[in-house]
Image (tube, rainbow, N blue to C red; front, side, top):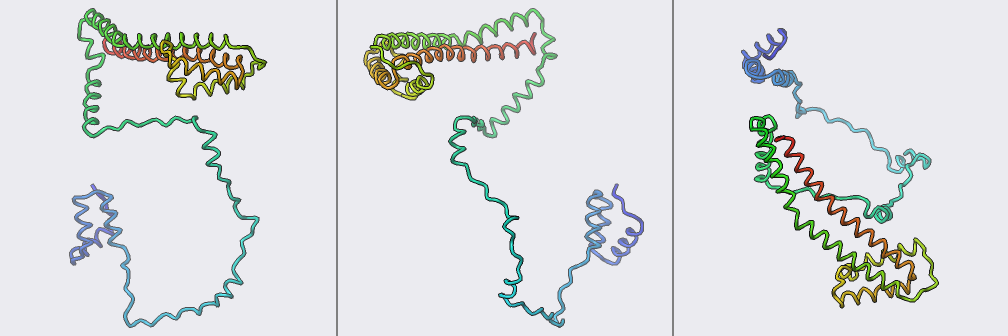
Length: 279
């Protein structure tokens, strides 16, 4: 219940009896409101009212203004030694240097209906936990877990075949291009890691080559890649182009492992979620 000390209470009650509206509001808050309301209204009651200037009041004599030039002459001079040095703007330089270093992830956009659907789903998951499913027969739950795991893994069957197919296409293509470059006449250019890196960058940045690389069965695509590789051999040397192609073979194998790892990680996540509430 709100509190007000006796002295103020008596004073405000007397004022309320005399018709003071603010005092009446304080008494009402004491009966119905909260302490914060009482404190606020008491403060408002005791606030000093702003007085309007009297119509017949004597005008205030303003001080004579100093001459503008005199003020300017007497103004303090800013000491250059105390000024803050200007910071060099390196935005353009740092934008270039940091290009590709930071990921900008997209935030999923959902509407209110989706939000409510997720809320309902999360509430259901909270309710149907491991304790809830412990009432079911353990052996039946174990059989169910096995079936669900096998069914979920089988969903990725086509994806697994596609991964193998893509790897084999690129691997076979790279073997052919490596053999083709090996058949070219030797030159005097020795292996240089920086030069081979440049050759690698030109290969991977060339959309024409990258779109045609895996199509070893297409004579037109193959001929385009061979012509581009001949140009790179003339520019960087045979050994450096071969080094770049060998790096691409390793990239192809690593890409296969990466894609398989994504599927394995997802299957493992799903399996753990089953075990958590059903096992």
